[in-house]
Length: 365
Image 1 (spheres, helix red, strand yellow):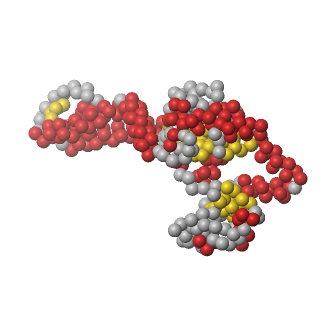
Image 2 (spheres, one colour; image 1 turned 180 degrees about the vertical axis):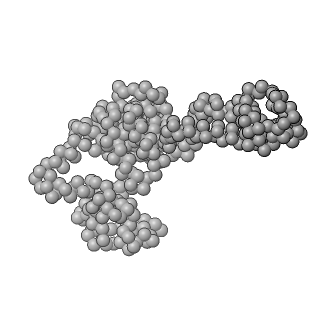
Image 3 (cartoon, one colour; image 1 turned 90 degrees about the vertical axis):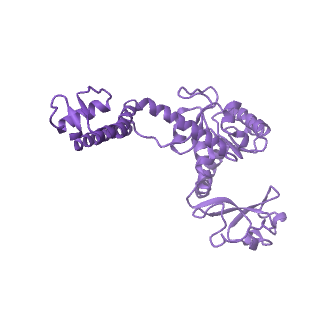
């Protein structure tokens, strides 16, 4: 897990935004350029050879060009050397030189200096991509820290329907940045406790911010800064020590997860009851066995008891408050309720049960 305080990135300036891209081998790029250069040369040689009677060689003024002469002429012409010993004399040959061979010469020269041009063009394309990304990026998810917890959070988001281009990672660690780009996630380089870095990540327009810093003091500072920039964002933060939970909540986090307590409780339950520990681990593991999910209430389910539904309901969200399924307040389900359920992992967590996808939700008119 990368620490957001006291870290530096030697490869990129602070706050630099990098969008994911397909990395190409330098040998592939070199081979592509060589193939283009050879292709231009071969095409020019054939063009001159098939029109060899329209040229004059100072060494053989009364004969046409041989294949060797054509190769020689194409080479010195494309390289802009131009000794002048072989010249086009026919009108059509001169037109071919003017409108075909001259553009080929320009293309060949561009290939010779293509490395520099490629760097400049790549930078320009990257700036254009970043500008387009910034124009359309809104209501996205910002993940601060791309260590073990950050990667797991992103995987869970993607598996629950969030597109990768709706997520952006903030991390100063080059290794974490490389992993994020490999995973197809945009990256902002820098310290997430700094306003300018968070602004580059578009925190002011984000709908959710997930903070998974390596240290709790970093989490507090990042939470304070995010909340100041975006009072409406839903902030989820992870802390190592339970004593820091109230402080992070006071800093503006809507939900705080204590990683050490959660792991310790799972270890204790696994020791007391190995089977119970395996069930809880199954619930925390995405894509296998059982899943904990939230879904909307369907119209046919209005007025029913939570225990009577096909899903195993464990809680009901009503008026943004969570009730256990057995509490008297939610004995009968009402329009607008949302359900926290346990269901098979093969079903999409945010969708109704199979066979009910076409039914209206209970909060729809």
